[in-house]
Image 1 (cartoon, rainbow, N blue to C red):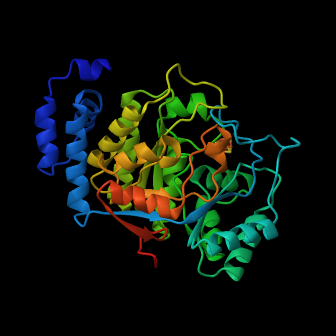
Image 2: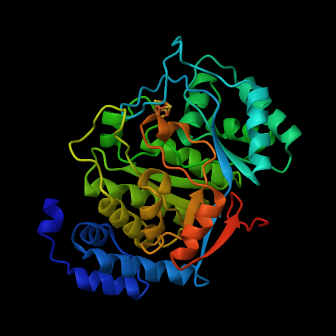
Length: 364
Ligand code: SF4
């Protein structure tokens, strides 16, 4: 527990009352709820905020595929078991034909989009990305490409000596539909220095999303917690997302998930528990009063906690994840299919609805 919350004069009940009244919380109030609010009262407050934004009791999900086009990376994030250094025998770059085959399989399963991300590969020319996207959109014009996290775009900008705005504009011109929030980890430079020194800083992560929003590309925001961050770092992260959303309104969703120690270098003694996850999820729903969609991370939490998440502020179960390499590399191998995900949502008391990437309804 932080010294700030331990000595804070605020009253948990008064802060929860503020939430039920629809008032915005300040960082110290958020910190107090995160650290002190009784578990089920926090859930009730988050559920009330969720219900005010989604009164129809619908919980959405998407059928899409996570495609990692290359695992070659020079960022050296200490928590990552997925990447290989340039020259490593296990490094790969998917060919365009392989990528098109993966999209065909996705379409055959009723998928509407792909989440396309990769390592920071210094050996590829920028034309690789333009040709890759161009080929995808030529063969599958209706498939939505949600691709290239802010650290990848920052990396492209530095490697190819192009302003971020030009990188985004060129990718958008060949079919990029939106940008995922990956690589945010914790938006606090002190934490990033220790676990992700080789990739985008807080300022750079925010700059990419701001520019994408300016160019009318929607993005998501994520947060990977449960490693070396403090509760204050979590509030700093949420504050960054809320401020940019106030400015641009460009985020479609927020997705908190927990660090997966598994095969990676341990960053802490005790990994986040299901309760830790649910507390942060609930606080995210409460604190991010300007973000419509909060996504449950059943991939990292397991399907049962994923289901409970719908009562802790989440209104979306994310993707059935036809393929998920990065989390699987860290030893996390939860899986499901569309039928099971719909049953889990219904059993939790919600109406399942299939959506597309930008949260529009999809044909069922
Ligand atoms: S998390 Fe991403 S950027 Fe970091 S080492 Fe792994 S692949 Fe590279």
